[in-house]
Length: 151
Image 1 (spheres, helix red, strand yellow):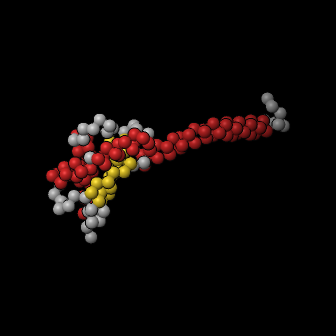
Image 2 (cartoon, rainbow, N blue to C red; image 1 turned 30 degrees about the vertical axis):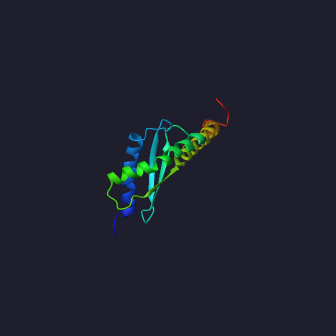
Image 3 (cartoon, one colour; image 1 turned 120 degrees about the vertical axis):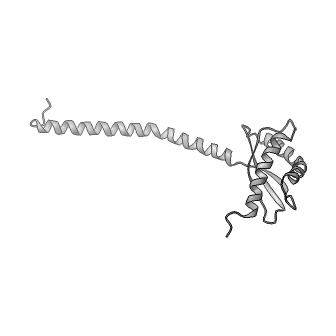
């Protein structure tokens, strides 16, 4: 069996070419810093779903505007890809916003918050355990030196 499917190889090539084309060839001022995070190509190579992220912008209106610019430029990008990649049929490009990065940042923040709120409890528990341990040791030392009387 083959190590990589043809659709995976085409998707990787499309991702590389689209990253360069979007950065260098699209001159629309509304387009922000777009990163092509992944590309998934259908089995028949008819469609390519391109997932993009926006650097530093999570505003839904801005995301929608950037996707509209990319959808409008899809024909141009497709023609440029046809010149750069040898394919009989260049897939139709469909752009989607990749929310996994934003979701990852939110989850990371929640984890950090949970860890930070747990630290005071841990330090209180550790102090209580240290105090209890010292009391036991001092009692044992007193027992060794006599009738339980302190020195």
